[in-house]
Image 1: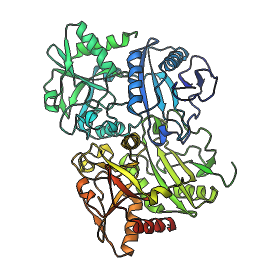
Image 2: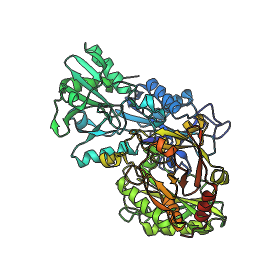
Image 3: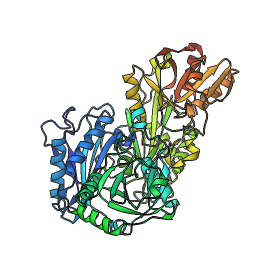
Image 4: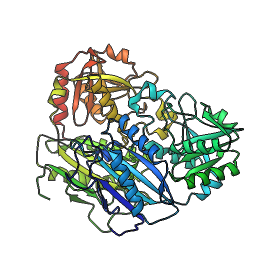
Length: 299
Length: 299
């Protein structure tokens, strides 16, 4: 493959130290042409959505919140009883893919670990890196959001861990389906609500909202992801003198917030400008500050 | 590839008439080596579990309940807003794959349709055929089953169609996870229970139970699959003089049934021999009759 590629694929030889390598003695990873096929139709990643992923932002060549993403990757693997990812091998492949990618202001890296071909016993793992789409409009003007039932109670992670709520799995058909429902409702994105009426997260983002000098998020243990970007947004807000914390809220309570954002690794902070068809206040100054901070992160 | 193969892969050129072909003017499908990679790491089937499938039993060279499976395939596609599968093309590829497969008493065919590579606009479709594992023990001795919360209310298909309950999607990580939970509980399989306490289905099967001369199943509209095998079991039972019907039951009500089965296309009817750790009555004669009937089906 050419150097300085527009997208880069690195395939891991041994995604987990707990499972055999694909090629004994081979290098930890090998670059491959992302335009060519590399997966078996028998890979459980596709036949059962049986695997996990992370999406990591790369700002000016720096993988952001890399260690938080790697910890969450390992946590998702544990929830799915997958062989534990060899984080050193993954980190090496991620950093190498970033070096290989043609430099740009904003890129992203996706890591995927699947259970591999059924019966084979070797998980499949790859790192895919590419340039980021232009999200400037979502980051400034904001997004129109609708609330949609997630179907699960807010305590499902405790009562029914086999539902894998809180793991970042490849079984994301619902996370895509709700975006189509949002578009049918003339909106851009979604906030999931638990079946017992609490605000959870977006399909690919965390919910953050402001009440006066407090920045809040629903928190963990609700069958939602431990937000890497949300953690960085809180760090920034604290540096400005905000207090930060967790608060379980209903959609009605969210509606009375002073501002709200969907925050995620690649799109960063997208202010909510409409909620269920009604205008929602955008805090333009704080939004700009958050996104500048996130873009400048070097770790 | 060799003729009379132990497994066969046929890749469709144009899985839907509503989307462009992969190669204009090419044959409707092409055989390919199933042992080689054929999927992109950017295929939404793997990155988002964004696709659908069917598993079809092949008895003595006959695809069983083929038209029912094709209808359900199209119904799943509609629930996911996928381009409608061209059922004539799929049927042709299925029948050709069966001919290509080395003859055996029992085989199965899997059809998979994914949304394809993101932004490409062409869905990915393939047919995979192979010989069936030996399920004789499950079909006679039976399976030990545990009930597990599915997290959703029984009416979620009506209230929240974006959750895709009732579609046979590639996002099956939970359907795999519950089997691991069953094994931890010293059981073989699972019956899902709705969050409001009703028996639903197995992760890859329908639930059928007997009360005297009635054969019953929870029915449709509960966010569960329209069972192709369950329909055939009912047809057989009616030929014996049973009445058949739908009944919404709790696990406690199921426990008082005279017999129960998990029925599915490939494993066929597996009698429940234990439910949540307690012995459950097996109707050996009816079980044998059902499985003989299912094995002998020619359409």
